[in-house]
Image (tube, rainbow, N blue to C red; front, side):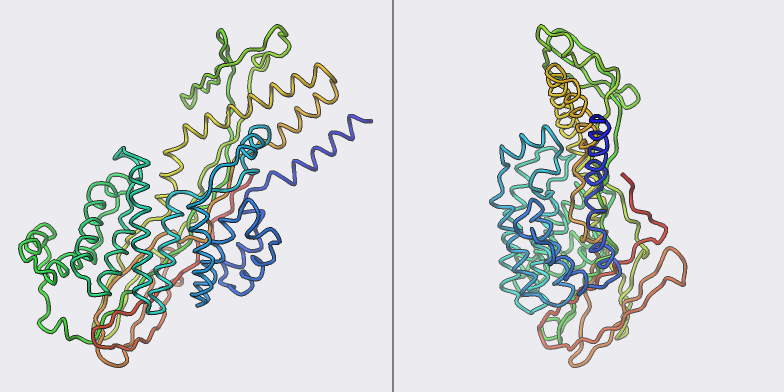
Length: 471
């Protein structure tokens, strides 16, 4: 009877705790994906733990994105600034890490991925640019530069994501809008080098055409005609600076956030246990994995982990949310401008997790080994309690499935000249699912001499055939 009650209680605990982060926030995710932003913000704000809980980083960045899309740019930046400071100050808690080793990593405070910390400043700079506050946007660009150096110092290998081309492009755009063409040229040049040397190999992404044209233009405006010629030949682009460029009415920089980035789920794998003197080895021949840890059962052979033939361990994985749209074009005022892919957030997310997968393997296997050792120790004192702990260990075993899930799948941009007065443009989105999914969105802009204005548009649609990952 007692044993049956223990089973029932543990099964209830297990079922309530094994959902992924995406599934535990189903209401907010559903409202956000449907573009019901006010409802999504209300649901988010109803989180009692909010800024204080272990998911505070995700609460802050989600509030930042939702409020930015609602046009609450100041409020959005307040949340994003808190997320930025959290990233600066966050240190791992020894107590949380110890607790994670006997339960699962979801009990720790989520620290944020490297690319997520960079994209905080993208949204902050974008908010300032939408408000016409170029100086404040430049402050965010300088902070981006500092974060860039920290990322480069963290990873030395050229085969790792250690530099972000889009962030340098964004810095160039901010300097460009402020008429600081020399710094804009340097930022664009840095972005081009990262696309050429890193992004092509890591993500198969070429430098955007718009970046190439901006690089030539700012070289000319900075008084570097030789560099401009060099890039004209390299890109095979015969761009010439219009004679009235400095007097023209103005420019538009249009950002398009397409789709939604990936969500995290979990997968599990069985390991065969073996032992050598003072070591226990976890091996999976199918995946070619082999990990050895120091371990000694002492004099009591009943405490030997290798009594088990197989052991199950859970790991995190990303699941892509496929986009509906394959590309976009900005048309109007006699122009037909292709939206240029500038950042594949989806690909970067997969890459960052892949790069630390060996570390994830080691941490997860060590966690399972400690939990099993505790179970065997308990069995010696009380068989029923040991059994209960073993079941509880199995039920609570899970991967960390948290990530910033309101980020876009891919970011695009283009630049258009504006005439004085009213300008009319259409953003035409082409769907890869058929013409019935194509969309057209109309925009009006007022051109002013020498002024750059900004516009962002987010398409939240994902492929309707996508199904959320199970657990």
